[in-house]
Image (tube, each protein chain N blue to C red):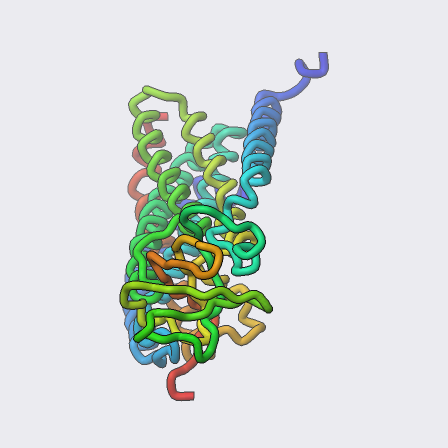
Length: 130
Length: 230
């Protein structure tokens, strides 16, 4: 009986709210379920603990003094955990010591055999002259 | 809001926006261009960072347009106002262009800084989904004008796209990603010197203005004609 008293736009308003709630709920549940898989890279600490097989994405900071273009090797660290990375191609120019990098490669227990290395820059911008 | 959607107010707003922009936009755009060209070079990225002056305005516009597209679609759904449908469609056109441009400019920027055009990073993926939803909206709108599908379906696509806004915005905070965190939202941390920040603000205002002008021109051109058939 109460339904009959609602004006047409109120009925449409109700249907809109129901649809909106359904979509927000659905997407929310989906995002919640997928949450852990949506990180694009792992941290060096996760790698040591989980011992993943196959291709992995690892992100961290290139350790100062460890980058050697001749030996094609550098160390990637995050907080106290550190891993060794071997690469076989020229690195992007922005992969430098004390700058963040994301490495794609396979983990063999002792070092990461990198197939791709990407530089990760932060949200800070600085004037070149200062 | 409802006052803005009255045809009289909207027509007056569109008329004044169009008339003033005709004379004021070009000198303002010239000043902005000079500000961008004389902005200092970044210490880490070099001159490539200037891509921020195209990429960030496009990304902001794509999210703002999505918000307006969604709100106008909800208004259309509830009140069946033709004016809301037209404004929603124009917001989708603005947003579609901005979303694809933000992806393309971001790809170039990423190539010269990260070392890759594309990665299935959550920020990039969510923005890609937004661009696809915009394109889907425009195609569905075309289909609805041919009476192939209901205009409710078109509004529904806009509402689904609106859910993507918080996901895009918070993706770099919630998940580890290659894309850097927001510079503009954390200016209190001195993420950017004023000499770089002021041009960025000026470009964002210019791009918002340009799109407002485009929307006003579209509205003036289409609203009276289409309204006559309703």
